[in-house]
Image (cartoon, rainbow, N blue to C red; front, side):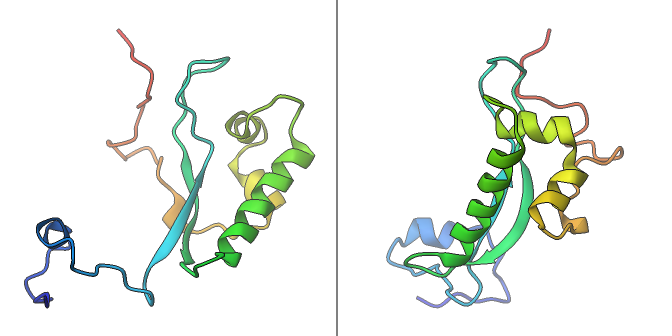
Amino acid sequence: MVVNEAKCMYCGNCYTMSPAMEIVNPDNDGIAILVGGKVANARTNPMFSRMVIPFIKNNPPRWPEVTEAIRNIVETWAANAHKGERMGEWIERIGWEKFFTLTGIPFSDKLIDDFIFSRETFRTSAAFKY
């Protein structure tokens, strides 16, 4: 099966109609890393996760770049968080700017998702409110 790229809307429907179609592109596939999300109401309200690394090249089978990035984030959190503090709570306490500084992850304008004019994310939460 060949996709007519001029007519493609990148919806992925061709894959659902023909599962044998290979949609994986090893040159362009990647992984995004999001941190700080929480679904439960335990201790604090639910929190949305935020993207901290928009793209890491997909490099199977051991994904060395991904494991290094996750190890960096987790080790930084473990070294700086209070006992029993979740990652999202730690980030809320220290702030996102310090999170990026401590982890050494470069900040990009692609990571901003909560500016004042963003109607999709303005004052939204996973918690139900009356």
